[in-house]
Amino acid sequence: MLHYISKYQLTSNPRSDILSGLTVAIALVPEAVAFAFVASVEPLVGLYAAFIICLLTSLLGGRPGMISGATGALAVVITSLVVKHGVEYLFATVVLMGFIQVAVGLLRLGKFIRLVPHPVMLGFVNGLAIVIFLAQRGQFMDNGEWLTGQPMYLMLGLVGLTLAMIFALPVLLPAVTRIVPAPLIAIVATSILVIGLNLDTRVVADMASVKGGLPQFHIPVVPFDLETLWIVLPYAAILAAIGLIESLLTLNLIDEMTDTRGQTSRECLGQGAANVVTGFFGGMGGCAMIGQSMININSGGRGRLSGLAAALFLILFILVGSPLIEAIPLAALVGLMFFVVIKTFAWASLKVLRQVPKEDYFVMVLVTVTTVATDLAIAVLVGVIASALVFAWKSAHNIWAEDSVSKDGSRVYRLNGPLFFGSIASFRDLFDPKNDPDDVVLDFGNSRVWDHSALEAIDTLATRYQDLGKRLHLTHLSSDCILLLKNAGSMVEVNSVEDPHYRIVVDYAREIGDSA
Image 1: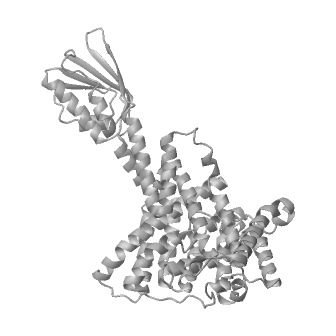
Image 2: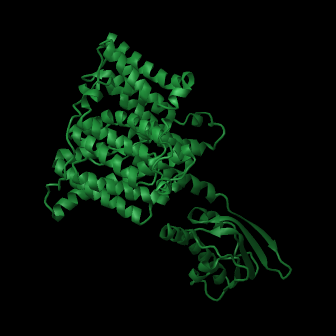
Image 3: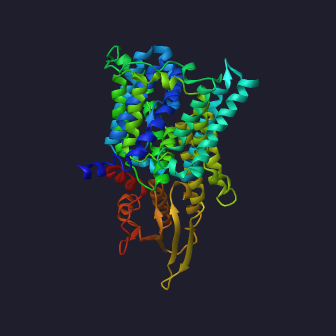
């Protein structure tokens, strides 16, 4: 039994995981309520989603220690659906979203998240840190106006006190913080101070009541017809994509922080299963939460027990502990989120401006700005496209040929660099069919053919020599490239001796996708 628990990664340190889970649960409450408001649904819809998704992804997901729940990235998309069609269509959409994510997991497509370049990852974490920071502005406002005078000074003082305790306690009381996470101590201490001195500051109860019962099984009350499908399908596809992108990028980030490796396909399955169940129990859907995940990791939570504990504490708050949670000052939770911002932002990225290629730094800044201005999914897509274009542009200029004349009078071109759609123009300019001798050798020993556009370029070059009555010899060309050169005719001679056995990239990528 102990071996199974260890293999399952339930926990390696029960005390740290449970206390870390308690800290996460406290921070989950205002987040879930706030995102429910953004999505135009009742607070319990967000809280139930946080409970169910956190519970199931902790048990079924591919990344121990990662926290999932209702998120702002999904809430923004959900709003228009709820306003136009009502909350029942939301539940149906969340169910379909979950099935799409399960399909992605079964097809093992999650592994392709590893193709996201490092500059995009840096832009992702920096942009998300800024988004978390800006999301706290509402706590410093009252009816859309900034607090002034004593309320503002008190809010700033309590936020600063909480933040200072989180950073100072591990230094001043390391023995204590090894037992109880510093963020949890800071929240409790700030709450005792506010209650003991009867300070007039906003608390969780000012946002909404978190009291409720257990979530009830509920089949979405929508017509089961094609019209409903066409309504919910676009939203479900967008939510599934956003949820998986945010979850898998968060998984990669935690992998780097903990020097471990999560399972992307299993995470897709876990996220999908959690959303299917959430939709049938009146939740708004969700995905990984980078803020709460950072709280968990920095508080010592590493095993699945940390997420399981967070979910169970959260449902206890809803059922019986609402008076305690509603008394927590919002300033303490804002201080905790500022701590997350500081820990999440990749400060090292500000120091490497002169040490990395300008193109990579541009991609990082582009993703950061796009994350803040739009949403994570668009930002990552823009970043990947920009990185691909930069790579293609650089690679297009890295092709050249060394030419020489052999003893028998043939001209030999030794090609160097990748041949693909971006380098075709440069490839064509390397040859002089009119002035070349009757026998020409094109050696691919130091080159690689990347796509079918490159094959067409080779075929076109062979045709040019053929039209001039000259013979072109192709050497060190892979077997699949040879088979596709059907239009070269008899004037092209392929020497298969010592040819490499690599496949062109499009075929190799397909094989990777099939076996992943």
